[in-house]
Length: 340
Image (cartoon, rainbow, N blue to C red; front, side, top):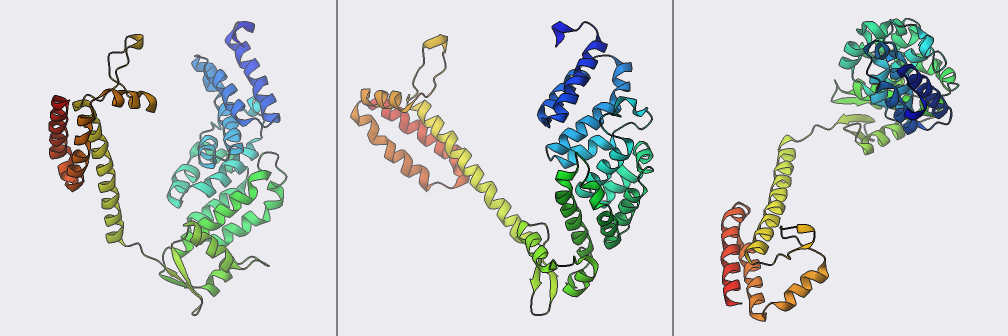
């Protein structure tokens, strides 16, 4: 593109045309790549005027890539003080409010929704165009989850007609619904299934199956008591969590120590295969054939010490590997070399 244009305005115009074409073709990675050509113009005034266009197009591309959290942040950063002429062919201000509101509801917690959406002076201008989105977010923040879901369900048919949003409506609604159930259950240690069905039941769809899916996926930390018809919270065991973390740390330390000792043993026993090509002075291990050739050239007595090294290392505790193990490997390697 650079050889065909001469000014920054030409670069921006050509970049917008490329973005428009890739948007219509639904080539989301190419949309982001063409946006980077526009944002690479080092002109503060033009960059400020293009900010709404870049944020909205970037948000739509991230939405198409199903990166909902990043898309929500992009829409929330849109400057509402600019005129919509720059992006009117891409999306309307009402679309920005719907996209940003639904994505925020699906990916942010109540604290972030209050601070980054409702208290966002720039995005509030967009929310005023879609009062039902603002009301749904306010209801979620205030803990009125069933009313929030009822508002969203009333507008589901409209969102299914949106050219960018319709593909993701089921996923977004499912995430919002799961968040509502989890937030509803947090203050309680035990909830009856009847109260949950009264708040979240969907006609023709049993709530128990949805709860089972959430529990199996790890979204909801609870158990279902089918005898008493209750949902019981499962509190994590901090002792078991700590023990698991310690065991994982020990395993990682042992692996690292073993690899270090193996490398030190190879160096001490002069088992490195020297690579003289391209002036490389460092010893590097090559393929298995080179190692076998090097081994065949050494005396047979040298290899009798390898089992001794292995047996001694296996007897050591993890904390002794980096000290005694290294000294043992160096010592036996030196003896082996002398005998060879």
